[in-house]
Image 1 (cartoon, chains in turn brown, green):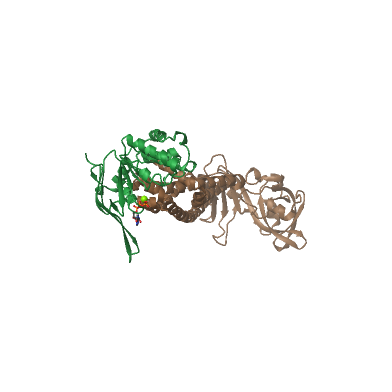
Image 2 (image 1 turned 120 degrees about the vertical axis):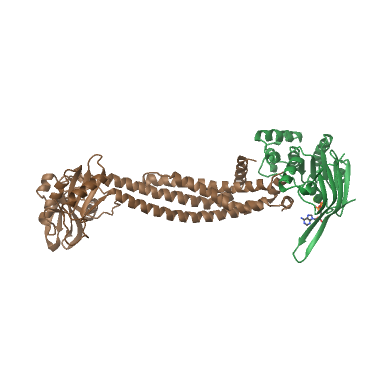
Amino acid sequence: MNLFENIRIALEALWGNRLRSFLALLGIVIGVFAVTALVSLGEMATAGITQNLESVTSRTVYVEPNYHSGFDVKRLDDDDVRALSRLPVDILPEVMLNGEYEKKPGDRSSITLIGTPGNAPATDHTIKLASGRYFTVSEANAGAATAILNDRAVTEIFGTHDPLGKRIKLVYTGGIRCEVIVIGTTEPLPMSFGASPAEVMLPTPFLWRTHPDAHLGKYEFFVLRLHGDADIKAVQASAERLLATRHSKDSLQFFNAESLKSALGNITIILQILLGAIASLSLLVGGIGIMNIMLVSVTERTREIGLRKALGATSEQIRAQFLIEAVVLTLLGGVFGVLLAAGVLWLVSVTVPFMHVFRLNPTTVILALSVSAFVGLFFGVWPAARAAKLDPIESLRYE
Amino acid sequence: MPSLVEIRGVTKVYRTGSAQRTVEVHALRGVDVDIAAGEFVAIMGPSGSGKSTLMHIVGLLDTPSDGSYRLAETEVAGLTEKQLALVRNRRIGFVFQAFFLLPRETALRNVELPLVYRGLSPADRRQRATAALEAVGLADRMTHLPNELSGGQKQRVAIARALVQEPDILLADEPTGNLDTRASDEVLALFDALHVDGKTIILVTHEPDVGARARRIIHMRDGSVE
Ligand SMILES: Nc1ncnc2c1ncn2[C@@H]1O[C@H](COP(=O)(O)OP(=O)(O)OP(=O)(O)O)[C@@H](O)[C@H]1O
Ligand SMILES: [Mg+2]
């Protein structure tokens, strides 16, 4: 009586009652599906997000003054730009201010104003033009009243109309007004899900000249785009060192995508633990269902058990038969659950843009299958013991 | 020549009912029976006289309340559960009134069943089961399921299942009880042939003409041998 024989008997018995077997293992299917799908989904989301983040930011270091460090925030300036000039980076010094635009007289909405150098897309690859053009370096240096709108600003201000060549009335603090002409629009940022605020990009000198809150010759932050294969940690460390002589300790903040990634990783782990707990619960419930169905099966097959014993089966062999049947049942549930999860994950990967990386974590699959086998073993013990200790002649007489 | 089956003063008492009012049923009241190897014995007697009970004890499916049973000169009371299973598998073939075939398995698989517990290879099992089915005249019904067979054919499958074990004793408890005359004759002809082959056969029956086929009849009444 080998294992293969037992598995065959188990499959035949389960097939003989296929509807009931199927219903009995639904709990396990759902449990395994839940763990596998959710854990892998979490991973796919992380993978997708990090990949997008990477495409946008991984080769980028952000530098900005720490606004919480005190009242006297020392902003960045052109000397800082020069101080960093020996690093293998392109430097994009930017200004960021608040403002409003006027749709109709008396109807104003707030908008973020960003001052950039000319031809910024060449340096900052996260800026991708959707239409029109970016203002040139000479336009920027001249402080031309030219504006680039991000996707959100376009829909807020112009709806579905073509914004190119149109004018916008900007209103600053204190009621100062000026007009700019829209010459280009940008693509939405990946991962922004339309959540980024409405932004207008303008030449930095234009903001310095017109905006009352602007600090002439000062910048709110630097975007450092790394050259080639320069090491991001080394570059950030050099930048910190180079700027340390010009700014007091802790008055500057540095960011790169690596830190974002590890933060995301932490969230994923917490999520996975939570999902694991929920899934364990559903597996427990599924296991009790299996025990119930196995007890019913033992009772129903009392005569079969009696016959097998009459023909020479030992109690151990009967126990093994029912134990293996329970394990086969739950393992089948596990396999169905994993297949279902794989199907759903694949569907998600082809339909949800930021989860395009199909991931079916092999560790999760192995773990899910082992757990389902264990559930069968654990919840099969009692029914199998009942079958094993049945008296042959009483079982044969059972009606 | 020592007896194959040697039963001395065997009793069987069933206790039924609630804890306060137990009812004792004396199914066997001190039975002595000797059966030699190669004998064809019929056990007859009225319903409830203890024929099946005796049969189950002989077949090691049940244990006596008291008395001694020696099978092939071995005292059965001293055997463990595992040893009992082994003896059932190696030495005893059973044929029941209600056939007891596994409904989802083919005739061939049903006949293979005792060999499964003997640990034979699938090929070996198949070959022996095929031979046994041929011996009972069912070569053309191997792959049929029990519900695709007539009563007589089912009983012949059950006999093949017992034969495949090559047992020392073939026990048949009213094997023709569920069959019509023609099917009964087919089955009884098989027993006759087996007896001629030298098999030991113990057959329980109500029907005098079935009992007449045996070389010896043990009459039972009210738990005792007459
Ligand atoms: N498990 C049991 N519990 C209680 N009493 C039992 C049990 N099995 C058998 N008996 C009783 O023991 C007696 C003998 O039963 P047995 O089955 O041996 O009779 P039998 O001679 O085979 O009858 P039949 O010809 O009807 O098959 C009967 O009175 C029966 O009621
Ligand atoms: Mg009887």
